[in-house]
Length: 283
Image 1: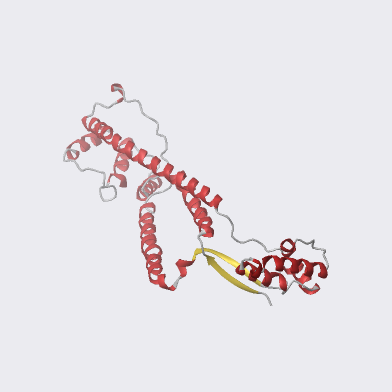
Image 2: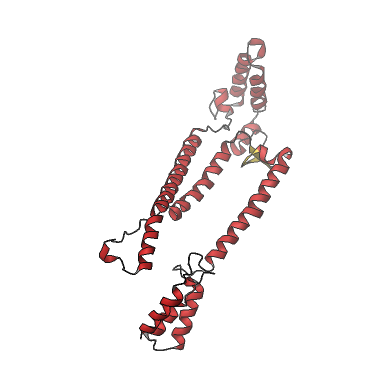
């Protein structure tokens, strides 16, 4: 009766195929999302810059941060290109891996046709046995393997079984290869593997997902805080006609201007003096 047998990757060949597939599945979308997008450069002529001192301060602050942004962009590009080079190297190495398993063909070993009679098969077997026998200078291990595989192939039933099942004894064990190195499931390394599994899948991954969710859940699809959208929606439904002054008040109440929601906001003492004057002049 046929059965199943699972085999782990002894030499790491199958594991490289698995690792290459997972690596490519991660790298392709990561490249799409992380590759720096080209930004439209605004014209920075003097006439295009506001004469308002805070605006000029902001302009100089942005100019001062440009080298840091350029360095970050270059670093991301180098990291992604390096990752793609590693992918190409892995693909090349995988292409050089030779498959160890070779289907055994007794007809080819005995150098006879598949339609050969049993007497012809026995005659070819005797000739090869003399040639590979250890007493005649043959390899004992190869002779034992040859004898085991071909000796049972000497009757019509064995011949038909091999043609049907690929095995002279009839239905055999079905082998399944698992693309994991054997050391990964070795009981000697069980504690080490368990610690890595626990750290990656039960600590690191949940923390990353939690941080990502806390940040992304605050924003809508157009990178506007959801609290700001709710504020605008409330006032737009409440008031049919909105004056310029009221529009400015609603805009200034945006969550993006709240330091608790946007750490980049800097509270300046002059805001308490200048902003009320601007509001009064917007009639």
